[in-house]
Amino acid sequence: MDTNLLKEIVFDLIASGRTADGLTKKFATMSHNKDLLPKLCEKLELILDYFYKYREIVYDVQGVRDHGVDVVLRYEKDDKSRKIGFQVKSFDDINEESWQTKLKAQMFEAETYHGHGMDDFYVLFCTDIERHRDKLRNATADLTANNKFVCHPISPPKVLHFLNLGEAEIGAYIKRRLSKHDYVFTEATDSLEGYSLTEGAMVIEGLVDMLFEGAQLTAEDICESSLAASIMDRYPNQQDTSIEESVMRIVDGRFFYPDTYTGQLKLNDGAIEAIAAVAYDARVRYGYSRDDLKSYLFHSLMADQIDEATADE
Image 1 (tube, rainbow, N blue to C red):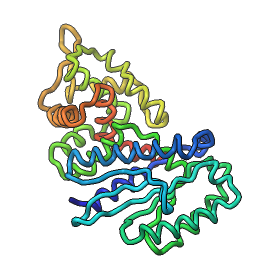
Image 2 (cartoon, rainbow, N blue to C red):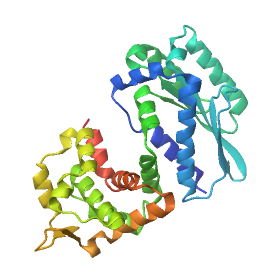
Image 3 (cartoon, rainbow, N blue to C red):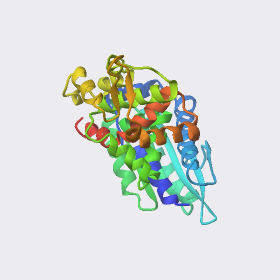
């Protein structure tokens, strides 16, 4: 089992995305024990559950709150137990005058007690970054200077993005990582090349509704895609054509074509095979609802376009 891949997936999901700085004000209302630790454990369990769908792994997640670590993820590597540790610092924690001294002591304790078996140690700053920016800058410098084990200080916008990830988004990311060289998945991704985020959302919603619900759709129905509307809200600068022009691009025969007499859309069976295969696999593997399946397919198959849109923000 490629445990390095598991470590990379955990890191990427925690460290790669970010919210706007202003949204981290939310952390001021969240408590360390009641809100943050359960939410962290929930996300880690989701990552491991999805990973287990593709790779056999022995693991557990425990909220230990002991020896400098709040949460520990344990897994087997070469018949030996390995650990990834997490220390959560809440808004109230960081408000304390001696919080950085306490953090240094926890780091020392974590290194003493867990150092030989801990591959990575994450410190998650769950606070209002605009209130505590200077404090976090100083603490991050101390953490990155540590040379005992790999330490990852994670800024509030990155932590909030991670804690807000939906189940389908986590599943989509892990699917992409573990299917990097899978022929069918690559075909499905390539089939949507050239489509904008909005157009991709329209295609995916239409395909799911027609394949799994037997929906009879027209071009007007595609135009009213709720998934596309949510994507336009999330990425307002990515829509460079009108909705009507996008629909005309979609109903062009690649995936859909209109019946001459009724106007109802038909599916181009040859073109949809790869996307349909990924969709059916996800439906069986994860038991997704219709809306979760749409979100999963969008975040899986439109990942390159999402990355480009995110880079522009």
